[in-house]
Length: 385
Image (tube, rainbow, N blue to C red; front, side):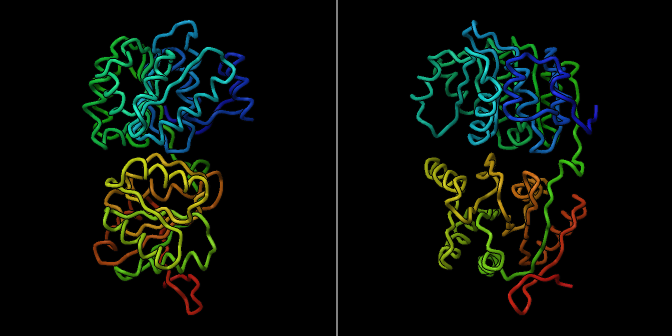
């Protein structure tokens, strides 16, 4: 079933407690993915939903989960798996909003990088909903600090990214363990081969919900490409920031070395920039992300994997210091700007012929117009005809 519009929440037969929580957020109508997923999940059916990021997937599964929770029952009743700690934290916050007027619903968030003792204390309070990254949940299972075999609903959020990141064995082991579930929800921006494999093995007669990226939920992002020398990327970023005055930028690189290099060059230009990548300790990564979220950092430089799950609504501009290898990564990167109905800007730097070929391929396959630009005589950006 393909959906293009939502429905009024008061037409979905939700409880007064949930309606109060929705009204508190001042929302009347659901998004299409919510309209498609809430009724089947309320009826305990399996769901596979393909929807772009930013279309309200957390409420689509969160509302049925909270509706189903029996506050008197102290066992784990629902498990939500997410690929990154940042997404897990975000989901937990939204679930707490949904459950605000339903007393006795307890939610715990489990992820790597946080002291396990703190999480064990939270688990002693007998939460009914567990939000977790697969690796950390597996750790707790091995330690026997949590029992999830009682879960009735299981959700994989950003399933494609989770399986891409190498969690497939953890995920399948956990699904095998949670064999008393009544329904499984798979939520994904793309339905990859791995997602289809999980659906085929673990779902039965799943309700398929597809939300296309239409003009309403497609972000308004002006996309540019600029020829620069290999070492001229940080200079170009500095010049563009000076020209525009933008205060919050993200810069993506394909390698750890490139993130370090670009960050160092920006710092030498007097720009407040910090980077994260896979070799930076989790605690330090968290501090940099938190600084960026608070608006205390101007340029956040990252690799794709390290940046997954960062949810900041008001990034002014995204720079692709390297052209990504995957079309989907390009969409994911530029999607950090142009949120909350604001116009965003994305600039991709082209330093060699293979990069030019890649950006042409991305423009063609994603049907995006990527306009060539250069610096004019006054240092301002102008079309490169």
